[in-house]
Each structure stands twice: as structure tokens, then as C-alpha cells.
Amino acid sequence: MVNKFSHSGFKAGSAGLTAIELMITLAVFAIMASLAAPPMQSLMTNYRERTAINQLSGYIRLARSEAITRSAYVSLCGSSDGTSCDGDLKQGWLVFQDANGDGVYQSANDTLIRSGALGIGERYFTDANGTETASPLVYGRDGSTRGGDIQWELCFSADADRKRRLTVNAAGYLKVEEVAVLGCD
Image (cartoon, rainbow, N blue to C red; front, side, top):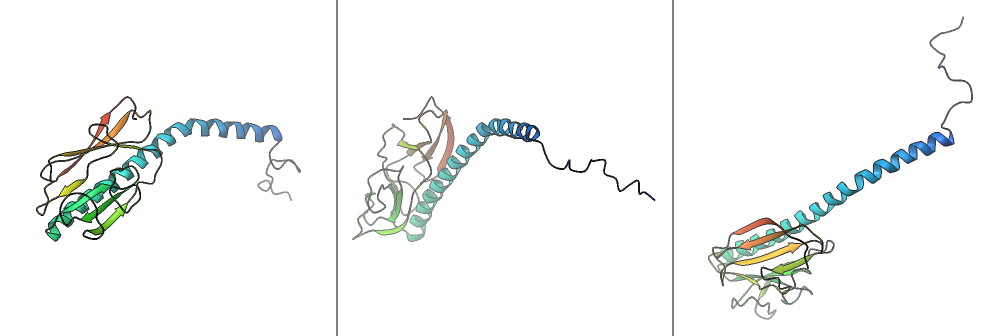
């Protein structure tokens, strides 16, 4: 007796793909991958921007919180080497208790609280005037800034169509906004 349900409908020896079927499958896969690449690139750039902004915003909030908690001046400055203030925020920054409130880290008198770096891809970091050497942010004992508002701008490529602007007002509050641009340099 023959079991009519056990027959699969395939001839013996016809298992697998032919070379033509395999090439068509690979071609379809390549086309689909090329269509997905631009949105993935945009997604990764957006992720890097958000990560950098969140990281720097966290350091700004840390500086303000430490100034209030310690009842002392606390500064955040750009640092390319992680040991001194040179205003180069695109390389890294220092948060430190600033004994005299001048925004300059002096290891003999000041206490380093934390240091950090973006470390992710090409980026352009300037103050509001487009100067690459950004002024330090100095918080007073009450959490307000010394010297008024400070504004920094972060861009991730020379041909970007938008950048992020971080503004810290005289009261010490941080605002982050997206600004349309025709390239960053």
C-alpha cells in the first residue's frame, strides 16, 4: 500500500539551488542592502549626535550640581590632553572645583571632578562666534554662571544640514536646540 501523504512531489536528486537561482537571490539581496544603506547612515549619525549631546549635557549638569553641593566654584573647560584647559571641546573637557573661579585648571589648587571626551567620529565644536577655542563655563556657589550666557555649537560633518546649539543662561540652566545650517567648518 502506498501512502499518498508521504510523497513530497520532488524527484530524487533535485534538492538545493541551481547556480542561476543562487545568483538571482544574491542580486536581490544586494539591491535590498543598497537601498537600506542611506537610511542606516543617517540613523548612525543621528545616534552619534544624540550621544555626544547627552554626554556633554550630563557634564554641564554635573558641574552645576557640584557647584551647588560643594558651595564652591566649579568649572567646565575644553581640554585636548585631559590635564589642562585649552578650550578645545572637540577633543575633551574637564569638570573641576575651581578654587579662584577663573575657569583655568591648576592641579595644585583645583580638584578634578571628572574628565571626558566625545571620541566619536568627525565633529566641529565652536562657541557662538564660530571660534574653535571655547570659553570655559564657570558656575558659582548658587549654580548661576559667571560671565553671563554661554553658547556652544556642535556639528558632525563639514556638509551637515543641521547642528546642535547648547546654551547655558546666566541662571545656569541648559537649553539644547537644533539649528539648520548650510555646512559646518
